[in-house]
Length: 204
Image (cartoon, rainbow, N blue to C red; front, top):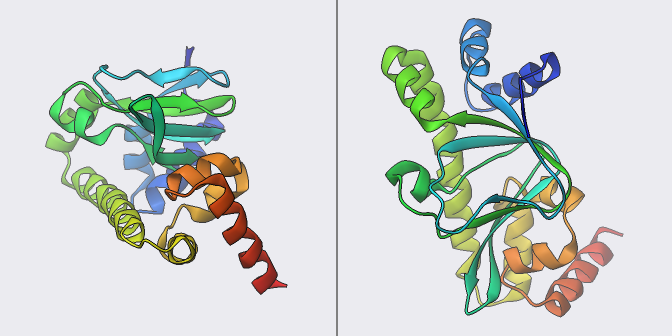
């Protein structure tokens, strides 16, 4: 279901943009006018494999699971809880069929803006170009940090780096079932449970 953006949604967008760069209220309003709200029930697919992703999204409620299939096994690519953005980046940039599936882990509300609108607006306004550049810097840093984390064979080291360098870790831990976090960290549920228990003991 698609709805118009509410006053409270404007505040969410403002917080999201200001986390990347200083931006005027005028520019925030210009951007927010191009967003629409989409709602999905728990278990509903937001993006299917093979679809072209034409949206950049910000989660305002719930958690989105991004994954691929590998011989029918589900491999978690990302987990996006409230306050963070997501899309199938390669599909979005190249207008190519997505290899990712995006699914609502809970009832989800997201604010979405079309790629065409981003492109048109960024051509006209250098300040908004800079804002989008800073947002993509954060996205690329987040992905690089996860790539670094996954290089370690030690489950203990991956768990440690998840807490130390993955910005979204606190958001993920608050809202996401353990089995999805285990998949995100390339661990079995048993490995994740063991590392989580060790982490809790250290904090006591």
